Image 1 (cartoon, protein in one colour):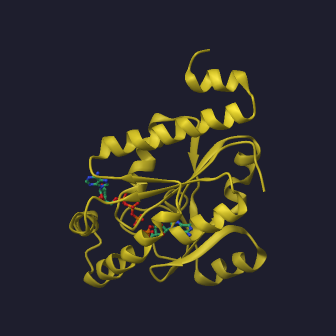
Image 2 (spheres, rainbow, N blue to C red):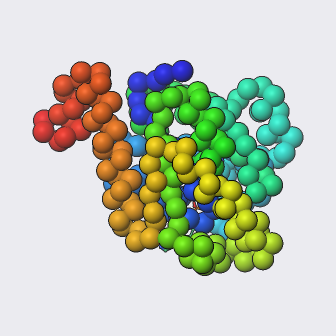
Length: 206
Ligand SMILES: Nc1ncnc2c1ncn2[C@@H]1O[C@H](COP(=O)(O)OP(=O)(O)OP(=O)(O)O)[C@@H](O)[C@H]1O
Ligand SMILES: Nc1nc2c(ncn2[C@@H]2O[C@H](COP(=O)(O)O)[C@@H](O)[C@H]2O)c(=O)[nH]1
């Protein structure tokens, strides 16, 4: 499957900071938009339906799977998460650049479907810092933290399948790294299509 825009996938162990990084990236880049996933998990803290996620019941999620409504879906930390076709297909068809914040299982499904997708894996600077970020965010139930820390070891092992790895130690540096990847991909894509005006636009020369 191929659409005219770029597709970026950002994956990371829970708490490494991918949502915060993607939010900062979107504020710097008006041409990029994020996909809002569906999930069977309950809202956390101040999360709102349609903003962080589309929160649906397990039965509704399974019906969507059966209807083929998802580009990808996976079970992550005991809940179901998926990227709906309806959420991004029209934007991709228009040539918009879209970013997905999903886990490694979903990222690998997306790469199968869209080989031109750019897969970026975000690493925390250390195990201890990852745990502290989960605690500071308010994931205070010890079993939730234990599950996510245990899963992080499996997830990080998958970073080798990704196109880029970004370490989120100093927040602004990590945002800068993401911005550079997006910029480089746009230039590469425009040059491949021999689209002179798009190259100039990406270089801000026009
Ligand atoms: N570079 C950083 N330094 C310190 N704290 C950070 C940094 N980046 C993110 N954080 C904080 O770490 C916590 C987890 O970040 P965030 O919610 O963005 O992680 P996530 O990877 O999207 O997690 P999940 O996959 O569970 O949604 C938040 O409280 C965020 O403010
Ligand atoms: N495969 C998919 N994974 C997704 C999607 N949306 C989010 N996620 C992953 O879930 C974990 C946990 O998120 P949380 O909000 O419960 O902390 C997160 O790390 C993402 O990697 C999706 O659409 N597909």
